[in-house]
Amino acid sequence: MLKIAIAGVAGRMGRALIEALHNAESDRFALTAAVHKTASTLLGVDAGELAGVGHIGVPVVANLDDADFDLLIDFTLVEPTLEHVAYCQAHAKSIVIGTTGFSEDEKAQIAAAAGTIPVILAANMSVGMNLCFHLLKQMSRVLGDDSDIEIIEAHHRHKVDSPSGTAMRLGEVIADTLGRDLEQCAVYGRQGVSDARSRDTIGFATVRAGDVVGDHTVLFASEGERVELTHKASSRMTFAKGAVRAAAWLDGKPAGLYDMQDVLGFRD
Image 1 (cartoon, rainbow, N blue to C red):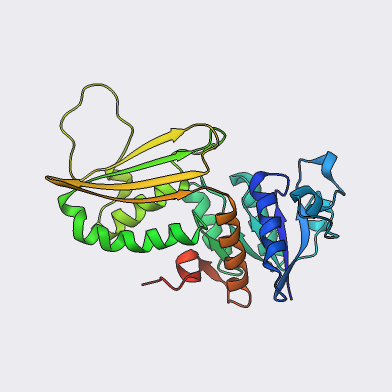
Image 2: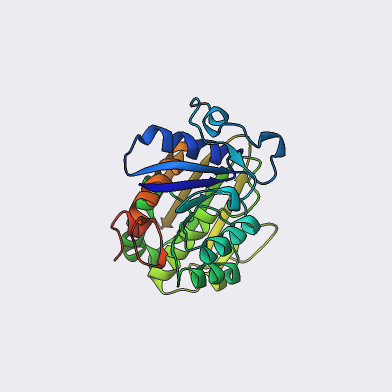
């Protein structure tokens, strides 16, 4: 049986991951460790009771050295996630990463670790959103060169990175498909008087408000028509279920850097 640890269990995603693993009721994997470094008042608390699913016999611990696991699921922050990647590499553990906001250098660190351990890194673990990534390639091929392209995203007021990792991944999919360099063609917000919009650019608009879980729309606008691809997440459980699915898929895989397109069989 695959032994799974969750990092950041006191957070909203951490609790959702505990619930998703509990509800999966699989004989292939089980939650065996719950970690939350900063929640000293929660150390020793049962992870199931913390997540509202009842007692499961897994206490919250302060660090990975106190955890018995084969695979770690991490939806925390950039700095602790990189520490966890280094730990997993040093101890031959697998890791599923849902954290966003990594720089290119930090992504390179994760890719280097994937040379020796299995790693899934995905900007969005939702199955529906990953279907959107897949569909977006075809939409970009058909519409991209003749359309103005805008990406509009909305998240809750506590989200720290902007644009979201998912929005950036949408932009990367479009740019890669059209042979563009996203760093050169991305436009982040607009203000004041400017020249007419260049068709070669990809625009990003960001909303941070209330408790929005995650809304993303890609807009292709041309003369006479507009095509939109929209995904709206109403619960963090969609990301948690996707992460559990990813963890089960990663079990037994060789070292390498994977994402949800691999998990779902969408890789071209």
